[in-house]
Image (cartoon, rainbow, N blue to C red; front, side, top):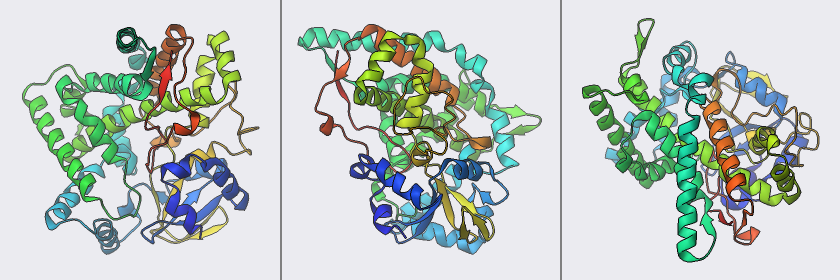
Amino acid sequence: MESDFGAAMFGSAFKAHAFPAYAALREKGPVTRVNLRSGEAIWFVTRYAEAVELLKDHDRFANDPANAMTEDEYAQLFQQATIGLTPEQQEFAAQTDEILSRNLLAIDPPDHSRLRRLVAIPFTPKFIEGLRPRIQSIADTLLDAAETRAQERGVREMELIDDFAYPLPLTVISEMLGIPPEDRDSFREWSQAAVSFTPADPANPEVTAKLIAFIAYLRQLVTVKRANPGEDLLSGLVLAEAEGDKLSENELLSMIFLLIVAGHETTVNLIGNGTLALFDHPEQFARLRQNPDFLKSAIEEMLRYYGPVEVSLSRWVRADTEFGGETMRRGEQIMALLASDNHDGGQFPNPEVFDVERTPNRHVAFGTGIHSCLGATLARLEGQIAFASLLSRMPDLALGVPRDDVQWRDATFLRGLTRLPVTF
């Protein structure tokens, strides 16, 4: 058991030095069993080939824990996860679990196939490409505002996360969903609460309270859209039907929750982490400035090198099995450690080298298989527009604080920065 590793791995301090630790784990084998702070254990897949196998194997591994446990075992798992909550919070947590467990990432076929069919149309490459002018307009407006503030202050600086990386994708997904502008400021706090918990750790009452507020808002929003549907994606989901199917209330709320959280968190981290990667590798930054045609391959390398998602969501062992040379028992939890998988030298030559021209680059930053990220095309487009705009308008972009002052967020699933002050 790598108990010390498990206790530390979701914290900011560990993330700052994670990749040598991941390399040491890969040397030991493709799968490692880790103790979490709660005392529970979890399997992490640290090598690329086994991660792809895990993410595509739906016969042995379930996304929905209910498909790998008895009802009593599942109830016990939930009870352990809600230790520390008041009775009222526990009751709501049960309702929230039922709601949030119906999203695309947490269900198995055939339900997964039905839900993906109902929501896939707005995420086709053709539809997403049609958003390019609006995304460019949002990016330009944000950079205009940053330059105006710089002129007023007499200092050409900005906080890249707050001023650009965060509002860009949040505005895009909010407009797609039809969320009123005055409500959007709440989503950052709510979404960060949604991704801040640690698997198998007792629930945090403060986080639970924020999720309660989030779900309550979503219910109200659905009621408004049912009464007055518009041309937005949320109205479409409310009315969605395909081949006689439609979304249940819980499926609808869960889908909206996923789209809001994943629809901006991933791109925030792509922009922030990618910019940091360029600062950390000035010779590669210079090559990209001199050769803007490298932008698409550079973004893929950003996704591989400092990917926005640290680990996959949990899978659950359906029946006793052998995997990665280890014996796994029914009901055990297993996750692909994507940040490690994308630095596996068996798949990527010189994996610790950041190369804006790297090709091929079949990383798993967005997962793979039927549960791969629905919004990957949108995130890539937002990233292309964001970096093209930064490179063209701010050619002297540089880190505005000492490198040691840059900190990663405490988070389980995500790899993202708390702040990134820059000068331009």
